[in-house]
Amino acid sequence: MSSIIKYFSGLFTGIRSLLGGMAVTWKELWTKKVTQQYPENRDTLVISDRFRCELTMPHDENNEHACTACGICEMNCPNGTITVKSKMIETEDGKKKKILDAYIWDLGMCTFCNLCVLTCPSSAIKFNNTYENAVFTRSKLVQQLNHEGSKLREKKKEVKPVVPVVTSKAPDVALETEVKTPNVEVKAPASSSEVTETPIASVIAAVKESKTEVAEPIVTPIAPAKEQETKAETTEN
Amino acid sequence: MQQPLEISNVTTWLDTTLRSSLPSVWVILIECVLVGVALLVAYAVIALILIYVERKITAFFQARFGPNRVGKYGILQSVADMIKILLKEIIKINRVDRFLFFAAPFFMIIASMLTFGAIPFGQGLHAVDFNIGVLYVTAVSSLGIIGILLAGWSSNNKYSMIGAMRSGAQFVSYELSAGFALMTIVVLAGTMQFSSMIEGQRYCWNLFNGHISSLVAFILYLISGHAETNRGPFDLPEAESELTAGYHTEYSGLQFGFYYLAEYLNMFIIASIATTVFLGGYMPIQIHGWDGFNQIMTYIPTYVWFFGKTAVLIFLSLWVRWSFPRLRIDQLLNLEWKYLLPINLVNIVVMVIIVLTGLTLTDLFPGLF
Image (cartoon, rainbow over all chains, first blue to last red; front, top):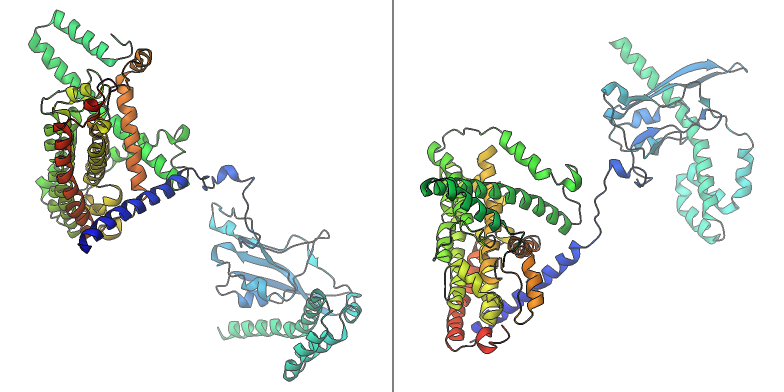
């Protein structure tokens, strides 16, 4: 008896669920079409700002960029997409200085991993979202990112004294401990949490400033070291 | 009462002019050729339209646009596809049974073509009006399975073979249900001839005339007919994920085109038989006593009525196809042998009782229907 009840209840629940399914697809039939009609919708197409399409080196209105030709991006690039060509010049006060000659990026080899942008100490490069990168020959994929006649943006001298004024005492201490003595790090967050009124943005700014300060002396020796290595290799060869 | 838009006007005019100038043997010969050509052209054109409509409606069910690049709204897409398929190479495959391999698509296309000829498209648009029309259609449409089985066997390929065997099991099972559902209506209509069946549905469609029993038979016929065409949730003979393409895996070019065409035409044939048997065929909607209304309805040509009703059923079939997931082979056979067939057998008995005891709508309300 129970099997007969099961048979008929199964039949009718089956029919009901099938009709429910058809109701769902009926609604779906009248929904708005989601297809993006690409070449026609160029004007209204929204590409996320975070979408990585093309590496660029932002230049300001004076045709100046922020690249110090340190070569960190080149070292971090997993498949040799970036070539930083630098040259030595002599400044007017007689110092020797390394500046950027040509920043070559090969779109055809890039995996868009963003490591170059993340590791750039002076935020000189970034990925933008211009996605129409198709060209007819492979050679056009190799691009020089620094503009013709561009030069390194000079550091503003008055920025440095501003830093301690903006940040309060506690984060400053934290920064110092972070940079100089890693052992005291445990103490640092506690002190910063005590001073809750400190705006986070200023702390971040301070961190950034201190990082660039610290980074520069570290970075500069690396690039020549690498040059020496390559030189050594060439001589061996 | 002559309607100006009927195609039967043209055909009768052609017949009288031919007969006035030629001996009747030649007239019959010429008319046979003309009918054959007309059917073949209709076959191809309907298939092309169906392919376009199917792709478009499928797209709408999936919230996209479908073909919209070739011609306005992509209307020439299926024509372009046809040209492509005609130009493709027919590949000769090693170690197939050459004769059966090449013969198989013809079985498929001939079976659906034979059925196609017996469908009444409109008043006077009926190639052969057998007095056993329903029986003929059921018999001939089941020949198509031979084409599928031969294709699977001769391809010398396990996927094709499994697909063909699944298709065979499915077709034989569901043919039974479809036949019983049609038989239910034959009991109600008292005739197997399509034209008199349609004439009998002038004021009340068979779908309503036999109320409960007819409705059940209609749904059973739609389900089993849908299964016979190897589409929708019953497309496991072609299950891409398991069998690449099932029985037509090894076919290319025009031979594949034959299978493709036959699939769409079978869908159309199932829908048109359901229209003829259940929904009054080409008969316009007529209501007892509303003479003005009836007059207006008859001004719409009968073939428009036929294709309109068929289009509704085809849409239903597409709707089902894009709603439900594919059945497993055991579920498929369960559905047929445990549900559809017993219900069908009971349904025939119920229909016989309804007809014998005078419980049909025409018997109950003689003035109304």
